[in-house]
Image 1: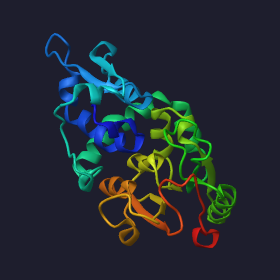
Image 2: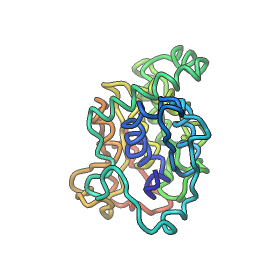
Image 3: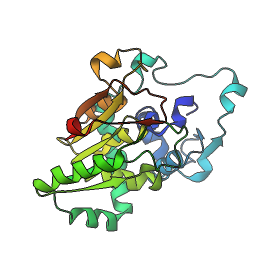
Length: 262
């Protein structure tokens, strides 16, 4: 698992988990039956995903992010072109959910019970501005407070609750559980939005997409597509894109128009 994109939680959620899912039966066999090692970056989410699947620590070889350049040449399973990146099939998406969703919930029974007591619908406002584990400090929502107040007001009127959520403050398993109980997630396009993978079919993910310039080969400015769109669509989650024409993918802050968000 040495694709450089797998250092990013968002791309890991589709590209990394799908590759592990394809080998789940082999990884489940005892070491005396099949000798297999997992060469991966030592990111917290990667190691936790392997642990939840029952992969023993001595089967995992941790590589640092410079190993790609030292290797020079390697073979990788899965798509390499940007045009196909994060393009999960429904079969793969459902397979990933089947392997990790139940184990993550079983490991966090208290969190599951707490979320089950919250009035529905449950909405999460994703706060990149306070996420200290992000690799690049970009696309924080400058008017996060007003957006959160709008979300809370709208959701309360239909009997539900909304809360701020910082993905980097929670473990992989905790994120899986939180999003599996959420009916709506709203946030600026990024790795946290790809947790749409764990939302129940029929839930909605609303991504604030900076489109001043394209950052995929496909015309984001015209189509509004984003990684969470592909991922959510594969598991029956409804994706909605709110395009931000004045915002760029690498801007430190972006602003969402409150009236449009409402």
